[in-house]
Length: 272
Image (tube, rainbow, N blue to C red; front, side, top):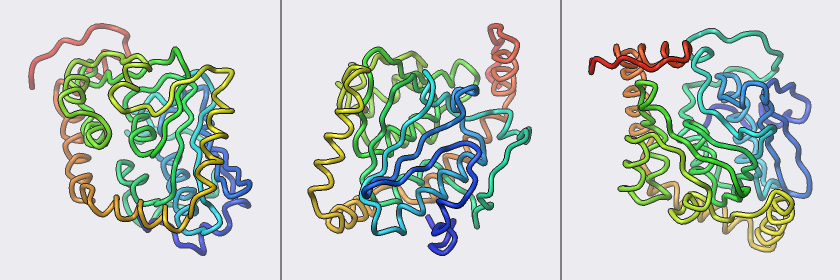
């Protein structure tokens, strides 16, 4: 993950972000998804901003822990399909384009800093990259996790690969092909969530974990996570999965599913 140089990311606190908020305090970098009106759906520039901030964390030895959180009652609704089809809308962001294609499934693997996902809202589709990519997931009681892609004529290819790193394969495949919502306590049972707590206690629980991490050697943790990354699927696997997603979107069923979702009707599948 070398989309941004250390010199570029060194200006992070002077940059303008359109889709996330960035704060750094006492060795903790906090990234907040800030697209509440769009259910924090992933916009291409939002992905660039996340990559920029994560690259900063990778380069900066003073960052020991990264926390990812979101505004609103939906943590992330997945990809913004309109934006990824080229309808980007207006936004103000000083984050430059990356030097190469960003594979979000690989983004978290290459940071090599312990990451806590603080989940206070429902998660769908591509939002699971944040959970599967984080080493620790603290989730609020009562939230839902959904993979509705097959109901839209699509398939969560890269999400499936990411989930297979932390959940049993049979459960992941069952979830992907049936497209249901998974309750938070069941997600904890299958390893997707580390801790379930109340809305009132989630900040305290997250702070407690941060303080525990800060008692340990940041260098040892960094090298351990780098070693873990070394034994995971390489960039070619993520590239293949992205190509399969693009192929599925272009299929007749893929186009029908997207159109039916927009029109709030049941899709008519042809199997083509």
